[in-house]
Image (cartoon, rainbow over all chains, first blue to last red):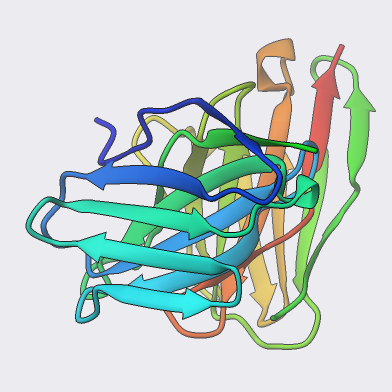
Length: 113
Length: 115
């Protein structure tokens, strides 16, 4: 039962343009959401997070948007750079519960120079 | 962010042997660490939650007698794959967080190959 879903396995974007990665979740108890970036044969690197009390969080080129009613979040990267090419995982947790992170299946982003 | 290390980064072992993987939080103390497994082109699968000074909590379908977890100190958790089989070959990653329910910081992972 995949509680966090990333329906796009891959995305290609031209350098300098905006990358938009999407994530949907089903568990209404989730109240904290995170995005991780992962290179092959490495552990995920934390990028940005958002609490359910917010609908937007921005950190440099990265912005995460949360739509609680739609149970949807997205990560915007602008401008996209070739070094952003990686697999991006969204994750969610219910902090009143076991505090586990539930991960999506990932989206492979390729930024074309 | 916090730094988590794993050792070894890569290990090859023969079927039937046991392999130990270490996970260390280098600049913070972690009462809870997590062990994940990643299959090719799949998401991260939580195997177990490692609790310092107590038994690990295993996810459904994970054999606790096969994947032994020990969290002997606030900076070290170990995962031992016992009687390894080729199907145990995978990428194992640990994580730890400063505050439960918030960001987890991941180790670089361990590639296990069982021949």
